[in-house]
Image 1: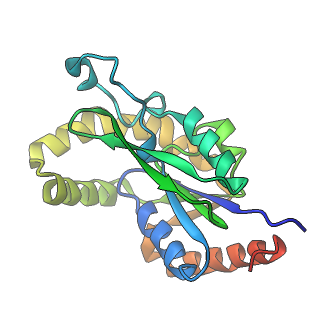
Image 2: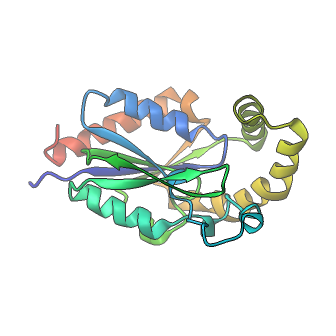
Image 3: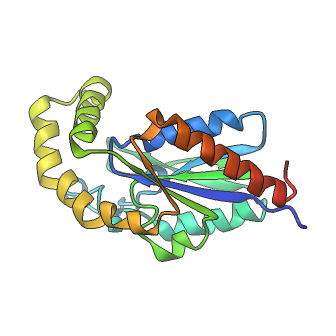
Length: 211
């Protein structure tokens, strides 16, 4: 059987623990050929818009992402071709002129809040995971992160959550749970689910003549 990479999609709401799940899987296979591809790097270029218009961007909406470029890169990586991953400048609210060279790997973990929303994107995944965590836990995690890492105030985090994050989650993210092969409650704290995932991935890799 020809060698073929495995593409694993890990979705879930902001603060759900999807990054913890992704890192747990990554750490297990760290000695092998594995990479993470974050959807956050693929926000659309907005350099053609005035800065005031860029400030209005809803980063929790499916239209904020350049999925066409992401799909193109996944296709190249599956064919063991290197890609130039874009870098997003959050201060300027548009894509940076910088890129990151990404070499192909045997395991590709695609992580992001809306990776299961696009049917064309789902078609390229061998396995689809959804990290399901209660809303109160997600908002607390998001609040701690934004205050500590991004210098935000409590009021601004709550305002953004109520006006944008929560409605977008209910409208676009939560419904994608039905496309998941496996739903993992409580994210990185669910060691049993992660161990099962690792075993399943290892089996697929062996079948694909990688391990």
